[in-house]
Each structure stands twice: as structure tokens, then as C-alpha cells.
Image 1 (tube, rainbow, N blue to C red):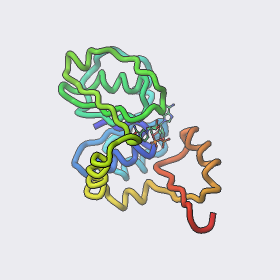
Image 2: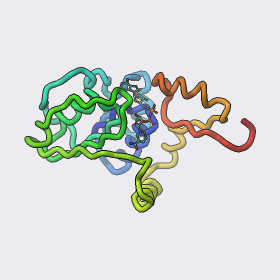
Image 3: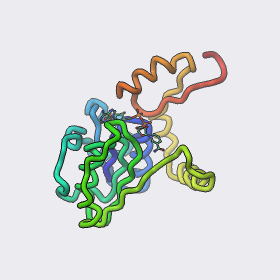
Length: 179
Ligand SMILES: NC(=O)c1ccc[n+]([C@@H]2O[C@H](COP(=O)([O-])OP(=O)(O)OC[C@H]3O[C@@H](n4cnc5c(N)ncnc54)[C@H](OP(=O)(O)O)[C@@H]3O)[C@@H](O)[C@H]2O)c1
């Protein structure tokens, strides 16, 4: 399984979940210096995101049974083009761009499925099922390892760092107590 934007909040959770479920996880990142963190979450292999970010061919060598993509643009297009016959790609984010410069080739020649993911408008029943899976499948020690709690007053500065791709894992803003 390929996870892109691996150091981000979504990527980190995806790696931990997939590894717990027994998948071999390849983490794609722009921060190879964080490889130890990514393997600690359960990634088997860490690759540089430049492998996926340049314009590619409509189809490439089949590499992934499935993909969790948080990056979009050429990364998502290349992920689709290199997904194995019958595999599935979850489009979750746009950290690298909102465009999708792809072709229909992976879908009509390899039966690849592109799954749209939205957590904002997801109905309650879907949320309850997802929360149940998280309670069952997310290793709490790994959740701790990827989570940093911050005071509300720190949020503006850390938001800048997050947008600059400098934050690892998830930030949880503490709204009570001393800020
Ligand atoms: N669909 C939904 O319901 C849903 C829910 C939550 C979030 N999202 C979206 O999913 C994406 C990830 O969310 P997040 O909370 O994980 O964000 P995040 O913590 O900011 O992580 C994004 C990661 O993407 C990588 N990245 C950043 N800039 C990039 C670039 N220009 N090109 C390629 N990779 C880049 C970085 O990982 P590396 O340093 O490892 O490369 C970064 O840590 C965002 O676009 C967010 O809006 C969608």
C-alpha cells in the first residue's frame, strides 16, 4: 500500500492503520530525514516524493495494491497509473495541488477504482463506522507518537509551519486550561 504525504496527519494515521492490518506500507515523503518516524509508525519502505511528483505516463509498472493519497496533482495521477490490476486509490487531499492530470487508462485497462474521500459532510452512520474502526485498529501508542498537543495561542504560528509542510503528524489544540 502506498501512502503519500506520509508525515502529515492523514498520512501518519493511514500508515499506522494499514500496518496494524498487516499491509506492507510504502511511505512517500519530501522529508527523508523523518524516515525513522515513518518506519516507527509501521512503514516498511520510505521513498522520496519526487519519484511521484513529476508528470508521468498514463500507465506504469504495477506497484500498489492500494493507495491513500493526500497530495493530488501529478502524485495522484502517477499513483493511479502504477496501481495494480483491480486496486483502489483513495483521493483524500490536495497538499500538492488540486488538479488531476491523469487519463482514463488505469480505470478502463486495469479496473482501478478511484475512491473519493470526504470527512466534512460524511453522514453520522459513516462516522460511527469509521470511529469504530479507529477504536479497534489504531494503535494508541502510535497515535501518541504522531500527536502534539498545543495551546490555542500557539495555533497561528504552527498553522504557518503546517502550511509550509514543516509539521510532523497531528496537532491537537488544547482549548481549556492555560493557553
Ligand atoms: N478528504 C477529507 O475529508 C480530508 C480530511 C482531512 C484532510 N484532508 C486533506 O488531506 C491533505 C492532508 O491533510 P493533513 O491534515 O494530513 O495535512 P498536513 O498534516 O499538512 O500534511 C500534508 C503532508 O503532505 C506533504 N506535502 C506538503 N506539501 C506538499 C507538496 N507541495 N507536494 C507534495 N507533498 C506535500 C507533507 O508530507 P511529507 O513531508 O511527508 O512529504 C505534509 O506533511 C490536505 O490537503 C487536507 O486538506 C482531507
